[in-house]
Length: 458
Image (tube, rainbow, N blue to C red; front, side, top):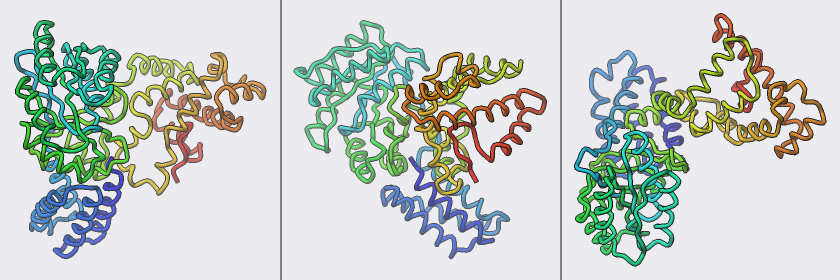
């Protein structure tokens, strides 16, 4: 989400580090570039003004100007101010109330409230071990109720019936009665959205809020909204006692303005962000980790959490044991690794969290894409089990069959097999003494290439 902003800020700080020492003049020049970068990222002007003012005041402090590493000192200030702008720390949902704890989702049409309701329900059910029900009060958008019902069934959430002929407040009342009788722990209410702010919409959501007295009133905002985020956030904040917000579609071509604006406008924390279309792709919003990503320092903590949550630990242990006993790494094992990577949002999702990725040579990161990994998976899936275990038996006729079955070319099969042999050698070295060091030396023997599907970085 922050790629463009991150690139620009990295360049600014690189220039400042090259100055040797900081002066009021080069700090002002650098902050002018930071200001432009934030505005281009669709951050609201009042937010940018306040941010730059705070950074400038701290940067002109004597300790920074006389620091032995002034460039690093300035980066720390910007990092601190970004964290402050986005809310200091992760704020969990406050559901410690008399059941059912109600979560009301509000926002404009198209922001992603309905899918967020299902994602949030699944997350609470799995992490908090609570019984979760969902209901739709959206009586205007065609098929909105049916959409939430389908998502509820797919994610094993309790579905509460409603229909377009009912009033939104009546749906809310009957949902509360149902939740109490069925001993529901958490009730998530999806409200109607509009394409723009209007009095009728605000009056309806206020009435629904009065009926429910929710524990959490969450503003759902599309991260690609840009400057419109300011008006929408302000209007909903005036109409409702918001407790936080959720950013959606952060995996899209968003410039990041909403993330850096909504907390400043509402004064309420960003609690979660949607990172993809899958029901599992809703993650806690950690301001310090996002600031780290913006400044090109990666997000290793989130990466570790994802690995722990989304990889099959038994499979990983089985592979480690296999390598240790010298039984070798097969194409079946490699396919399993591709599946695990896909569960974590693909290679793009992983690279986004690695430190220094914005400092790769131009175009290098773009070469590493999920399409290549999908192609590799299709090739392996078109092989027989025997071929996956003993790829040496794959002759010309077998290659033709595999290429036809996977919709690829014979040269793609050859490339995979060649790189896989190199990968096997690396894995063999890794299983012996001083494994990791040997493996890294082995990368040199691959012409600087990474495992199959990943191009050489030179």
